Image (cartoon, rainbow, N blue to C red; front, side):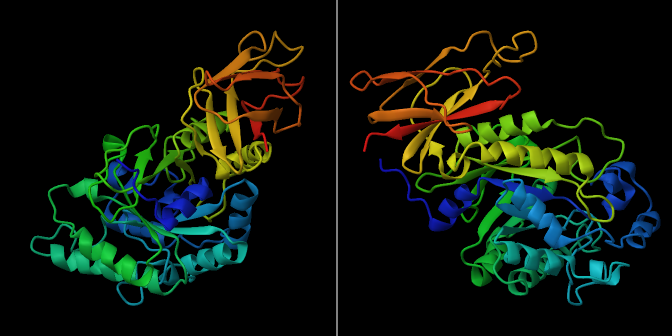
Length: 415
């Protein structure tokens, strides 16, 4: 059976590789996570007080998008409306529960959209499908009215902000017994943004599951993107979304932060399986990136610089390696991602394994001319038996004072 054809929009998506997810809304002002209203259950009137505090005083879309770009990210996904029902965009009369009617008095999606366009960054709009605020959502006999409101909201986003690279829907899992009429929702996207990626998050309980033929991406919410439950005959891209801490939105009492090294390992694992990583940050109430997350992303960006183009151009190669090691193919070369290397002259402190060690690739490789570390250009000794499909190289240790977490070797082909 021939492999399914990969649509051009999915080829472009996979080359983006690494993106920034931004969960920002009224819940950010409470700094208790994005499900604050649902889990803490404040009265509606008390929750509305957050609306009066939402001033977006620190939201600089251009600076934020530039931060993401400098960190090696190639797209940004913003929560234009989350489950609380508050919109960061001008809802054009659908209601007044939006940023232009808040103290911010700004269409924040407009600013975000313009910044992505100016910086050449991929632009994705997250939009909830559930709505705790809207009166029709759980009102008996009003389901079709709610779906009209949802579709009208998407039409605004699809027609007023220029090119949109993708729509990231989330929430159908909340009401599994409802007829979501996805055909009509996705038809709005296809009518106005025919090349946009369509995502509908399967949530943590159904990693990789896709239930509708118009959805392009199998999502992996905080899970390894290994397997995909897909219909026969069509190609699905993969994306893992991941949090820095235990919440998607701002939470000033959450100290369970991921390290830059953890993010590097997660990004590498995603690319091992051909998936993108969408790394989330919950901006502050005012709309800025928190200091820890901003510094961590910058450090990950410095690691990406040591990998050349392999993170973006590389696709999984059908060869075998030891443990977590893997090989990507792309850009006219192969790229070996090596884990657990020791540090030269620092054996009492290293977190890798003892010894430099030989690394072996098993599988069909073309004849290799040269193997080098991408971070410093050091040429590595290797042997290759093309007939047996075996290549072995000496994975030298990290130089003293350096630890790349995952180190990449470039395997250049014989011309």
